[in-house]
Length: 282
View 1 (cartoon, rainbow, N blue to C red):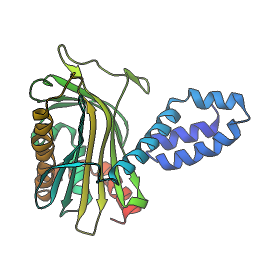
View 2 (cartoon, helix red, strand yellow):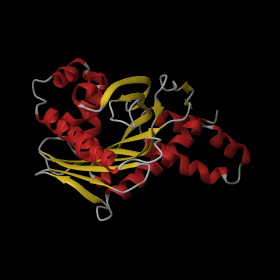
View 3 (cartoon, helix red, strand yellow):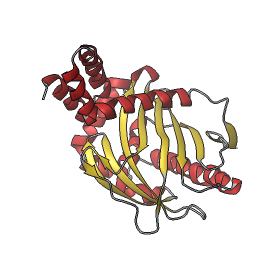
């Protein structure tokens, strides 16, 4: 293998996506006049995923910068829920001003086995494969009302820093039947797989004690027509309680099981602290 492609792959698996992309762009210039190198690039799945991931990150930043095209559904003192109309897809957004630093919220999301204990709509989550420290393949099962009951979701979930936005972004993307050599298990009998077209959690540092949390989901549950009542349930109940529960757990981090998990997995969380410090000075 070309050592420059190997370097890009190494950076990819070290979660240094922006650095990997810079190396790729330099190599792409040479590849424009080198068919053999061009073929090697096209055959490298990590480079294809890298390009798609960063394109998706740009798309998410653009979507999050726009509030005017969203319909407000529910608002409290520090949480606002929005939706967009669609006949057969969920397009929902939440914004929350959290009086806490980013780290506790990230620890909640990292402890995969505990997600069903605080996210009402999640029945179970299985880790299909840990690809890198900040990238996992996950399979969710949901507790959803009729007619979208018995749904699951297979995701490529990965994190990256957006220093220019003072934020940490977690992107959630549906995966095909095979991803980086890993077979993605099919839905259990009778379950229907949701397609996550766009999913993002963005944690923007507002101050030393405040974080702006943004969640956006554009998903197709594969129902021919979603009743307005179900969309309202998803926005007002499912998403609101997800965000509200995140707030409660993050604010109660001290002395919690999440703090215990952090202490028990010090090497990983030291890496998280290092990334936060380098990207956000936190």
